[in-house]
Length: 397
Ligand SMILES: *Cc1c(COP(=O)(O)O)cnc(C)c1O
Image (cartoon, rainbow, N blue to C red; front, top):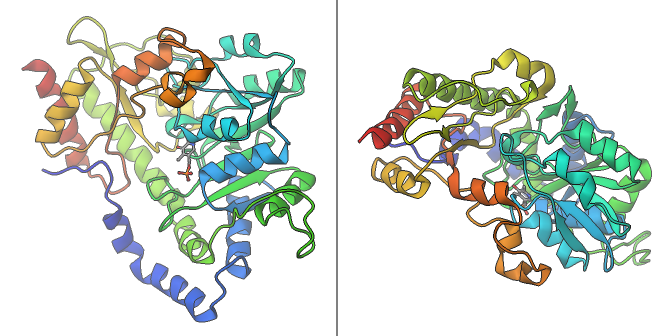
C-alpha cells in the first residue's frame, strides 16, 4: 500500500471543474494584476482569519518581509524568533539588516518556549515572530503579554497555521500582523506561490498595501521604498475556490491525526502522557523512552477544542533512530519528511551570528528526532493503520 507524504492530485480531482471555471474567468477578463478577484479573495480570507484587513502578497516569505518593512525594521534592530522553523522566518529578518535573536522551543509543542523569551529582550529588540509550527498556535497569551510589556511588535508566522486557533482566536488575528503562505503544500495551497498578511490595524493595513506596490500612492508617487509583492489574480482565483473547502479539509486532517493517535495507542506504542500542559492536548509525542518504548500524549480531543485548534499542516512524531526509520518507511512506499534537519542557528549563512551546537538544545534534539507522517485530507484509515503498523514493525524487528 502506497502512502505518499502528500497527494495534491487527489485534492485537485475533487475541485477540477470549479477551479478551471474560476481560472478561465480570469483569463477571459485578462485582468491579471490586482483587481476584483484579488480583492474578493482578500475579503474572504480576512473573514476566515477573523481580522478586518487582509493583504494578498506574493509568498509567505514576502508576507514576513512586508510586515517587517511596515515596522521599519532594519540595521541595529533585533527580532526574536525560533531557530526551529522554515528558513524564511529568520531569513526575512536578516535580509533587512536586522539581527535574528533565537529563543529555543518547548519540546512538547515545537513552538517558542515562554520561559526563555523575556531574557532575550534587549533595548534593540523591536519585534517577536512566533511561529505556529505544524499548524498549532504558539502560546499567544504569554507572547502578547511579554510584547505589550516591552512595547514590541508581534508578527505571527502563521504560514503553516491558517484557521488554527488559540483560546478561540484565529492565528493571524492575535498579534499585530499575521503572515500566511499559499505554497502548494500548505493547508490552503495555490497553483504556485502566494501569501497574505492580516492585521487588525487600519494604518498598518494601508501601509502594507502601499508597500506591496513599490510604496506607490498615488500612481507614480512613491511614499516608501516598497517592492512588487503582489498576489496574482490567477492564484487568487484558485485560492478563492479552495478556501471554501478548507474547513472540510482541516477536519479530515484532524480526523487523520486522531486515527494516528488511536493506532499508535492500539499498537502498544503509547504510554502515559509526558506531563504536557493540558492546552497542548492534541500534540502527539512519540518519544524514545528506554529503547523501544514510546510515550504518546493521551489527552482527549475535547480539552483541545476548548483551548486550541490544531490544523495539522503536519503530524509529527518523535522517534529514536529517525533516519533509519525514514529509510525503512521509504522501502514500504511510505513518504515522510524531516522538518527541519538543521536548526537555523547552525545554518552556514548564519555563522556570523556566532552560535554553536548546544546553544538551543531542544531545537537541535527536535531536528534529530522528528518525522512528519502523511496527514493530508485524503489519507484513509487503512493507510494510517499501515503507516503505524510499519513503524511498529521497524522498532520490533
Ligand atoms: C512555508 C513557510 C514560510 C514561507 O512561505 P513561502 O510561501 O514558501 O514563501 C515561512 N514560514 C514558515 C513557518 C513556513 O512554513
